[in-house]
Length: 149
Ligand SMILES: [Zn+2]
Image 1 (tube, rainbow, N blue to C red):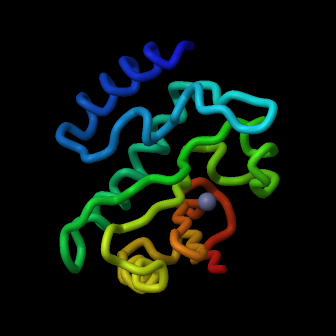
Image 2 (image 1 turned 180 degrees about the horizontal axis):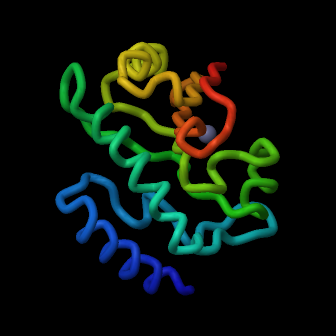
């Protein structure tokens, strides 16, 4: 699937399922982005169900406390891209169920505190890094949860 095909296909799913969402196909999967020896490929379309669940959480983070944009550093990674960027084996990013984000005006530690107040917090993986946060919905995908680092 080409970058443009991915954009159109994903946008159709977003329009049908979460009309008005702040998140875009190329935030979910920046198809064609190059790293090291590899180029990010489009995810399998059925994986979008997982992205939709994560979008619910990200829209909540965007709106909660005070409304501010969410910048997406990394969401989907195929297995080659994940290896090239040093992602964990079995990374939730390969399922579309994880994203590395910045909430504008909010430090990662504050994003963590926000996420701990979400009703599904016990199903989340939450990681705080220098300048960004990792959030995943592992507990919705039959993986051990919660996880914090
Ligand atoms: Zn991550």
